[in-house]
Length: 430
Image (cartoon, rainbow, N blue to C red; front, side):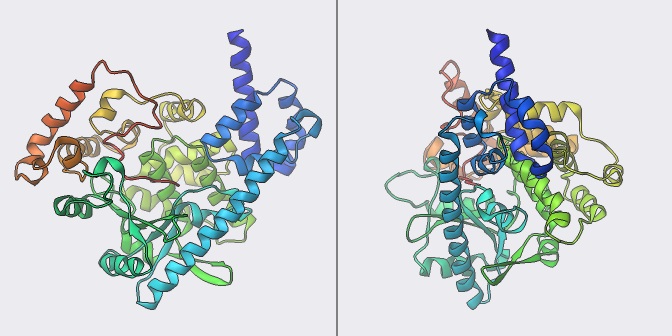
């Protein structure tokens, strides 16, 4: 019985990956029947598709499958979701365009990031990519001005509950505000209609990450895309790959959609007529940013799971192939989302996936030190008022965190998707 269930799970995962293939028309006709004949756990397929934000791609893929193998209600359900996601993404695009126009009028440039950027530049259809928030990048010296402009449009800051001392007041204390601006790299603003949250970034990585992102180069290399007759700024393809790999690592590679993102970015030059990827420039940036291992792992996942065409010359430029241990660990997590990271590390506010994929031992030591000692805006809510204001707080903080973790020993583990943890205190709906 257990063997049968394991086989159905493996077959279901294989079908999910087949639906994500960019060259579905040529490959699926040969593979559908062999996969579907072995039996599919349709509930598991929908659960995985929902967890990984891949229901629109499931619909696009299963349209090519022989209908006699599919449950009668499946395609109508997925079609409705696809159409709803299309409408939502169009509204999100209008949200960005209106914000970008208001910022441009005051001389503040804005560059669209992550989900919306990828949906409009590398996917076959605007509805094919699910995302939550609307993300944009602002020059750091323009952040105060940009926030003022958006608040005049009735956008309002929102913060995660674990940062707030009073949940009824969406406001940080002055001490928390100072730490927030120094610690984080983004501010979340809610749109006036409460339909979207707009994440205003001024860097691509948080301050405590031992990664060096060159924002000046990001703006210099920015690409242009046309949406609804408007020209908008996006990351270059090389920076899109690096940012996707860093973002996925920061979020512990929990979503297959990031692997699909990498596949679509690499294939976009041949499918959409974009300029070819500059692999030498990509490798140079990955090494300079200290993100080489993250990029190698991300591209290795795309190559293994989706047959993404990575040229041999690119593999030679990286000098090292992706670690088999890194790949198998991430793949196991992707296809088994119920697997938890080590509880002790999460309790201490340490991202085990990031720790594994940092380039050097020196980077790991720096990350561990920063993760344990750097004050965070949620400290005041977690440990009580006062401590973060102390001059010696960074030396006392590890002991406070350790005491809190010891106090949680023996408590039952809560569901991973509802846990409030120290390692991730800002919401990320992408």
